[in-house]
Amino acid sequence: MMADMESLQFVLIEDQEAHFELMKRAITIKFPLATIHHFTDAGACLERLGDLNPDIIVADYLMQGMTGIEFLEVLQREARNIPVIMITGQGSESIAVQAMKLGAWDYLVKSSDFFKLLPGAVEKVIRQRKLRDALRESARLNDLLLDSLPHPAMLIRRDRTVLAANRIAQEMGARINDLCWRSFGCGEYIPEEHKRYLREHPGSVPTGGTKCTFCRLDEAATAGQPSSAKGISSFGRLWDKCWTPIDDEISLVYTIDVTEYKQSEQQIHTLTQQLIRAQEMERQRLAYDLHDSIGQELSTVKIGLDTLLDHQLDAPVQMVTRVSWLSKMLQGTIEALRNLAYELRPPILDELGLVRTLHEYCEDYATRHGIQVDFFPAGMDDLELDFDTRIALYRLVQESLNNVKKHAAASRVVIRLVASFPNIILRIEDNGVGFDVPDRMNAARGERRMGLQGMEQRVALLAGTMKIESRPKHGSRIRIEVPIGGKLNGTKEDYPHC
Image 1 (cartoon, rainbow, N blue to C red):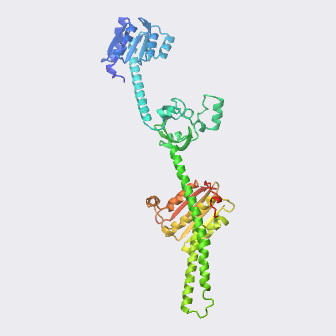
Image 2 (image 1 turned 90 degrees about the vertical axis):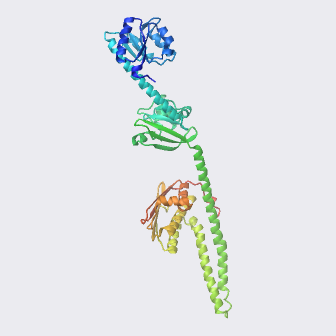
């Protein structure tokens, strides 16, 4: 780090004693606490540099034993990073250019006012070195900060130039002062027309620059807050990237490897999918067993009861009354069993389709529970949905109406099912008591309720979205959007009882 301005260490290489005294006088007037070491021979100076560790060297171009250019070459070979002001009486532009290329920080000609100009030149060089040292320290701290991060991290300017990169990013190809999309493996995401331009003009950049299609750097810089892109594929892995603005021009770009997380997420997704399929198959089996086996047996028993006394004209009135009561009770049980089987798996879902099934379910629900249900389908008649989408939409309506019955205290529910390519929109609205959505969702998770959570899972498996709007005393609104056709791979063959 540069010493304090007034306690500087100077080395003056000058073989003319009078010139040395004049330079010394000019410097000490400006920097009275400075220490000045005088050499008439460049070689002797080089031998003592390690001991003196000067802050600045003022060297004459013509010195004993070597020229100023040769002196600069030695400093460069020995990697001595000491500011040098070159002094010459020749005023040669070529010497000046050569000296500056070799690392001289300034160049002065011994003119009549040279001794007045020297202190100003020294002050300018010292300030430049202080600035350089400060920048180096800042860069060092940046490097330490970046290297402390466990994932690839870079400082990137708004023109996409990499200003700094941690060790991990550099090992993966990031190069300082290069464009991030060219050096960090994401060039596949730049626009196609730019790819063509780069093939035709290797090493150049399209006019106006370019960027990856997922890049959020401009967005982050303009908004002054972090922005992110998820699931970027590069280097055979999946990454989440975040752009955090440092100022208007520079952002920290942090990249997290989420491959294992995404794989685990996909495994959970697949297991959930299989669980729901298994649940549907079990519901099918139970529905058919209840309807075709137990239901038929109960119907046979009822017929037996109804005909038990047909040939006994003198049967006691008490027995006739008892048998009649048992027959009516059995008829109620058969109807409840049929309703349960229908709830588990409506057979007309496969025979007559989703819209007709929902019409009948809503009518039956209204009759049984005394709640008005208005069902409005639109654009669904000519739409062929895959098996899993039909099942999911039916279950979503079913679960929503169950929630209304349990919690809403509503008198009316409006259901709209609309085909709006490329999505199907399901909207369910009631005039019930409403609820606080965050509180209800947190309570549902804490109490392991599966109503709303189950709906969320079904929607997620179809790669859809679900939004709930509600507040106390103002009813509830659910809006669900799923792609037409859904995302599950199940077919009717997955459900052998259909």
